[in-house]
Amino acid sequence: MEKLKNCILSQVVVEKNSMDNILGVFEPLKIAKGEFFIKSGKICRQMAFIESGYMRMYDIVDGKEITLWIGSEGKFITSLSSFVFETSNNWNIQAITDCKVYIINRENHFRLNKTEPKWLEFDNILLANSFALLEKSMFSQLHTTAKQRYDKLISEEPELFKNIPLQYIASMLGITPESLSRLRKMN
Image (tube, rainbow, N blue to C red; front, side, top):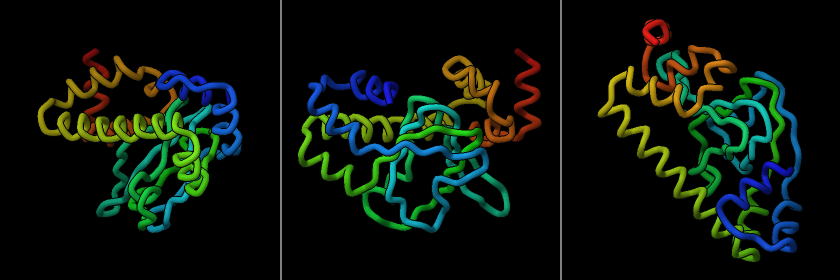
């Protein structure tokens, strides 16, 4: 739980009593490789902090898996709109490797927003970061080449290339696995 605590403290200053209240609502969970955190069509009522391992967020379009995002150690993952608005979730979130996560359910999350001002502050930062990530991803798909997207990802998250099947990375970059192989050979 130290990584979760450090993640929160990297964004906001939280006194010990408040931090204890925040951490006290998170439950540890192990998710085996291949297991789902949530499947599309369901309502997502949990958010996970990834202590270790990798999870991917994807959908199936015309029989083809399209990876939106890969979550790694030290990151939160959920179907944000489903979690916040209690609507049907559009994404599958699946463990790519064995994962250890800490789960906060929706009820506790919103209770903390009302009772712990520092959690609300942290939650607002998480939300802003989620929108920024989506905005960057959309801009990248529209205005950069596959090589530029590959170079950026390998410089920012080189561990992905050691731990994640390349077809997931290719999909996340918006290219075919064959194109990814060619890009990797060029470097």
